[in-house]
Image 1 (tube, rainbow, N blue to C red):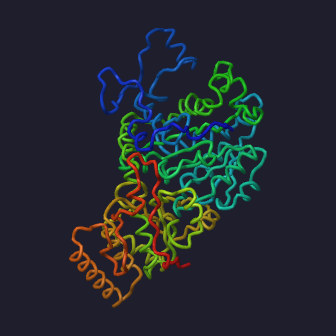
Image 2 (image 1 turned 135 degrees about the vertical axis):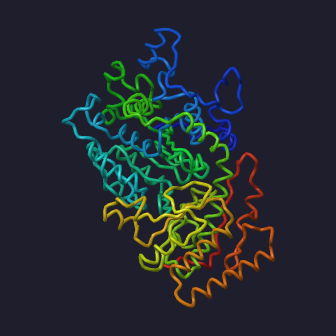
Image 3 (image 1 turned 180 degrees about the vertical axis):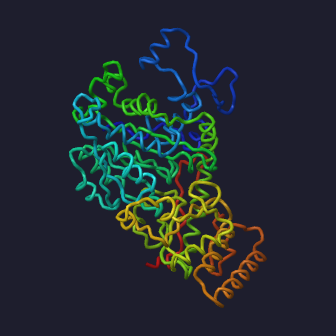
Length: 522
């Protein structure tokens, strides 16, 4: 693993990188915003140039399946935001995870000559059992059919990761903030285990974004994102990315990583390390072989949408986090809610990790359990008016979904149990609307689902009265608590840490903490 400083000490602030990171020489017209290169192919100056580019001996664009100038700018910008040495953009976050695992744990990595052989078994992955359902489906089904084994472990137990590793293990896979419960694994501890057993640590940083966390600073070798989510931020465009943090060094153990260190027919008889170095080998395999052959390429228009979204990442995520913390605080007090899972909630088992690794906040995804049966759960979802019933996160619009019947519907019974996903589980992705409006919607839906008979009408009248009183008392403060009789601080009110935040975001702000007297009900 690389011993060089991470990130580079002279790197600009995150706000500057969001707008200017990765910018290369501008086109002749010098546009302020990046142009969209809508072309399938590229003209070569000579046959020699074409030959050298296709032989991967010289850089250049050959066909938009493996890259375009618009996509390349996004790759450089996201690599800069993560403090990485390079990146490959893909058509979706699912594609980014797929290509990463195939590169690390495919059959060629188990063969002495680095070539795939049908009689050679593929590698093995250890993965968090509290993870996005699409990643679980990928590992349990599609990659399993390709021969890649998986063992599921508790992300909170570093010893379980060590016990699950085998001679074939090539990757540990986890999420920096878990989906749907916002779990926070101890990344430095798991990184130490991964490197001790010779595995690369792959961290899905989708829910955190590099504004809240750079996993490479904690020991991650590869960072992946669904760029669709917070990085783009508007719910319009699919995209993904694979970022090499610069820590992965296959030449340190060439027998363990023959796909990178052995001469390969695919690459003109050279090894990837020989041709591109430790810091280029992984991404070159991802781009020149897997992206090229499988084709999950990012369209230039989607890349441009992501570039526009990234420019406002810090201010958007800051708002998302404050809204989520306030909604979590209020959910704890509602009698129709059994348990609330978010690191900001008092009593969270991840509070220490949140304080250590997430000074700016712990994201805007949370889950809770409705105190009722499946009919009550269905009544809750059908009563929502402002929240969208949709399977996405990171949008400016708040969304609610039922993981057991949507995003995690194909999990094995064992993974549902260990992941604590029940038919009463609700996942929220908090957007950027006013807290008062969001809480009014949640409260009325919870009342409709869990408060019965005359009590429901009483609760509705009380809620309406509280809203009217709050509106009359503070008509200009739309973000404050207007839907709840319990006192609450306005999410829009600046904290002391907010005031201390400099323009270049050099000083991380401390996330607002809910009142300590409110505890999670188990």
